Length: 353
Image 1 (spheres, helix red, strand yellow):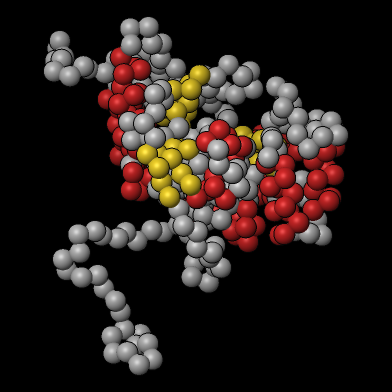
Image 2 (cartoon, one colour; image 1 turned 90 degrees about the horizontal axis):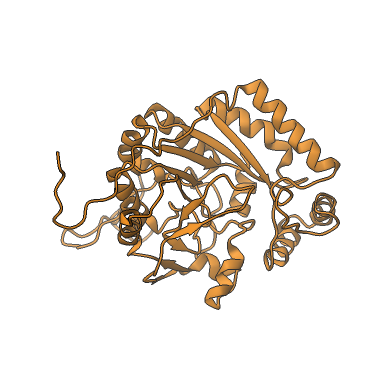
C-alpha cells in the first residue's frame, strides 16, 4: 500500500477527466533504480524538405538508397558518426545534435512522389542510416510510420536499423511486409552493460529490452539481425561474443559489426566523454584506436573506415568470424524482393483490376 506524501492526503496524481492530451507508459527497459540522465529540454523544428531519398555509391555500405525522417537524434549516443552533420544547420554536433531536432512532416508525401516517377528503379530503402527512425519524438510525430505505410502500399522493400523498442509498434506493417520478403530489421546493440549503455547512449532503450525486441520481431515472422556497433577497444570490444550470443538466443539470424569512427568534430567530443567517464582508460582507448587507424584517430578511406587495420583490428575481425560460424549466423542470404514493386496510385486513380 502506497503511503501519501508527508502533509498530503492523496497517494496518486491521476490526470483530470477533461484533459485533451494523454500520456503513454513506455517500457524502455530502464528500472527506477537506474540513474536517469539529467533532464534536457528538446525542441523540434519543422523542416519542409525538398527531397527525401539519399543515394549512396560508397562501396562499403550495403544499400543504395536511404531515408531519414529526422535530423539530430534524441538518443544522444556519444559515438554517433552523424553528429558532425548538424554543423550544416549552424548547430553544434554536441548537445545541439541531441536536443535541437528537425522533423520532416512531408517525408511520406515526398517519398510517394519519388516512387511515382517514371524513371524510378526499385532498390531497398534503408531507414536509420543517419539518425534513428524510432527515436523518442517518433511517438508523437509518427513520420517513420507514415513512410512505412507508403512502402507497404507499393510493395517496396525496406531495411531498418534502430536501438529503440518503439519499432514494435509497427509490427503489424512489418509482419505483413515480411511475408512478401520486403523487410529486414537490425537492432543496434554495442553492449549489454547497463552502466556503459546509460553513459554511452543515454536515452536509447536499455540493452536487455532490445533483446526482447529482437525476440518479439522474430516471433512475428520478421527477419532480424544484430548490429554490434561500434566496437571500441578496451571499452566494449570484450563483449563482442557475449552480445552475439545473447542476440542469437533472442532470435537474430544475421549479424554485423563496425569499428568506432570519429569524423570531424566527433574526435573532440569522444575524447571529452572518455576523459569524463573513463579517465583511467582514456589514453589507452585512444592509443589503440590510432593503431587501427594508421596513426590517426580517424581513417575515412573506403574499406578501412568500417573495419580498420593492424593487429587489433584483425583480432576483432577474426573473433567476429569465429563467433558467426559457432553461433550459426548468416546461414541464408536474405535478398529482399524488388520485383513486386508497384508505383503508388495518383490521386483519384483506380486500379485496373
